[in-house]
Structure formats: C-alpha cells, structure tokens
Image (cartoon, rainbow, N blue to C red; front, top):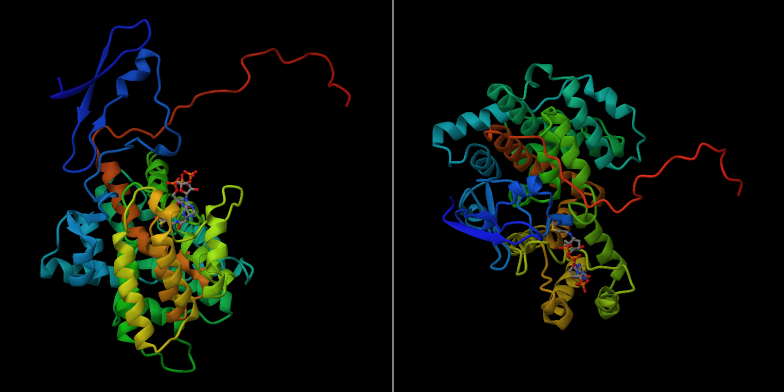
Length: 430
Ligand code: CMC
C-alpha cells in the first residue's frame, strides 16, 4: 500500500483507496488507473490536471518561473553552456565529459548531410509553400530513406535515429528557406558550430563569402537552447502518443512538427511579430490592450500567457537580454522592439493581465531577435521545431524505455446519440 492515499467515495460502492505518488519536485499525483475497472473514467479535456507520464527530463515550476533540464536551471545553462551540450544532457541525463562531448559533436557533425534524392521532395512544393508544410513532409519522408534505423525496439537504432534527426534538422530547415527564396541549397560545413553551420546554410550564396557574426551565432545558439525542451507540452505529448504505437521516429517527429505549427504553440512567435506589425506604433497599444481584454473579441496578445507559467517565463528573461545584445551589435533601431517594450510595460501593470497572471513568454522576444538576424517570419516556427527536436527525441526514447509502456489511448465522455435503428425506408425528402 502506498504511503499516502486519497479515498474516493463513489455512489453505491465501497470507498476506493487511490495511491498518491510523489516525484522529486512538483505536484503529487493521484494514481487513478484502477478506476476503469470500477466503471468510471476521469474527465480532464486539455489535460489541465492530468499527468500523462512519469519523466526525468525537464521540470517546470510555473508559479515560481523555474525551468530545469535534468535539474539544471535554464538561466545557468544559458550562461555557461551551449545548445549541443544541453542536447547531450537531455538525451543522456548527465553533463558530458570533455571526451564524450567531443565525440558527440563529431557524430552530430558527421550526419548533417541529407540524401541527395530528398532534393526532389522539395521540388514538388510550390515556391510559396509555408516552410512548416515542407518540414512536416520532408521530416516524415526521412523514414523512407533510413530503413536501417527504424526498429524502435532496438536501442542502437533509436540512438542512430536520434543523431540523424538532430544533425539533419538544420540542413532541412535551411533547405526549406532556400527553396522559398529560389536560391541554391547550401551544403553543411563541418568546420562550423551547430548554430554557425545553420546560419551559413541559411544566408550564404555561391557568389560571395558569408562570414558568421559571433554575436549572431551566440544568439542563434541561445534561441536553440531556450526552445530545446519544455516537458509535456502539446507537441511533445503528440510525439509520445504517436510513438506509443511503435511508429517510426521520423514519423513521430513529423507529428510533433504538425502540432507545433499552431499559433497557440510554436506558431506564436510568428503571430507575435505579425501582431506587433499590426499595432504599428506605440500610440496604438492601448487600443489593442482593450481588444485583448474584450471577451467578445478573439484578439489575444500573442507572446503573452502560458498554460504552466503563472509568473515570468524564465526563458523570456534570457531572451530579452539576447535581444538587446543583438540589436546593439547589429546597430538596429527596431520600432517593433519599442512597441514590444511598451506593450510589456503596459501589460505587466494592467489589472487584467496581473489578475490572470499573463506574462511575456519566450516567443515575445525570440521573434524580434530572429527578425534582427534576418530570418523571415515564416521561418520562426521552423527554427522552434529544429530546436525542439532534441526534446521530442529525448521524450520519445524515455517513453520507449519505460517498462510496461503501452499504447496511449484516452477515453471519452460520450454525449452523442444513444443506440438507435437505421431506418430501412428511403431518405426523407427536404
Ligand atoms: N491575451 C489576452 N488574454 C489572454 C491571453 C492573451 N495572450 N492568454 C490567456 N488569456 C486569458 C483568456 O482569455 C482566459 O480568460 P478567462 O479566464 O476570462 O476566460 C484566461 O486568460 C486563461 O486563458 P486560457 O486560454 O484558458 O489559458 P490556456 O492555458 O488554455 O492557454 C495559451 C495558454 C498560451 C494558449 C494562451 O495564453 C494564449 O493563447 N497565448 C497567446 C499565444 C502564445 O503566446 N502562445 C505561446 C505559448 S509559449 C510557447 C510554447 O510553449 O508553445
């Protein structure tokens, strides 16, 4: 018997003892697994109070604004680490030794090229396709190229797939951009860092040399790091659910990309910049604040609010600093940043936002940084997907390694028609 139990009284039944489970941090959970056999399900659309799994990767304390990867606070990782080291940490649970890290980087670097035939997939798309539409398709298509690593029950196969995805995402993301621009694809360069290589594949052209600006490279690395994982968010849960049927890793990550695309999730950074453009000037902010508060108006302040954070998103704080560094270094005087700063100030002092605990989230600043770097808005969510791939894979591997892992299969409260007979007569006339 568990140390702590919750007692549930159901009509006409003996009280049921439900074990209470505790983790290392965060809310305790009530284990309701036996309820199905008692003729009941729990009802929690949107997973507001449901822990869908046990996990050791990332922890968020939304009230205190804490984000930990394998126990390490995101602010400390942002100051003292880099994206690929965080990737190692997420995938393997521990900080790498120097030798392990060198080996890890070497392996990631040596898998960055994609099969030449994948180029034909790109050519099937219209030039004005949204790059996320391309990413969903080409990442899913990887499963047709790498048959040698599709046995999800094989630990080595899972690892190879993890390396392939981590290595090839920047290449595919840059290809989707180059395709939309009508420019030739740029092959990866093994002498550059993960972020530097991505920038080179995005911005270099055969006619002139592209030199990676170290401030921009650092900012890109930070954007990747701040988006690397965020525990059981919608897209990660999608990847876990897709993977629970033993589906192949590339298909699972394509499912994650599809989920991330929406404006309530990864699409928010794109939507946030569109909103700042729409606001247009500092003077018009009050008008939009009023609209955001109006229940009859669907308008929301993009880049504000979070399901879990009910305090400042710690990633937003780091991103805000990076945003200033980049704008200063590139000597960019961006009117959108002025609007963003004023909007943040007003929202943080407005009763509506204070009461509902709506703070700026990571997407609020990342869009401005990416715009300063020269990344078009349509690529924002693609970059989020690129960076989040490691988190998706870490969760996918963790799920498959869990003893007794079963297919994810939610239940429902059926409110449709009760059973009835289908009429044998002909259809009713209008
Ligand atoms: N602007 C105005 N009001 C808001 C906003 C907003 N951005 N976000 C939430 N609210 C209000 C909402 O109207 C509701 O009010 P009421 O209780 O009176 O009905 C209350 O706050 C709670 O909102 P909710 O929609 O029930 O909260 P949720 O946890 O289901 O949604 C969210 C979280 C992130 C989808 C939502 O805050 C939102 O739509 N924000 C804008 C989009 C955005 O920035 N998304 C990026 C999230 S961070 C990146 C990521 O992890 O993907």
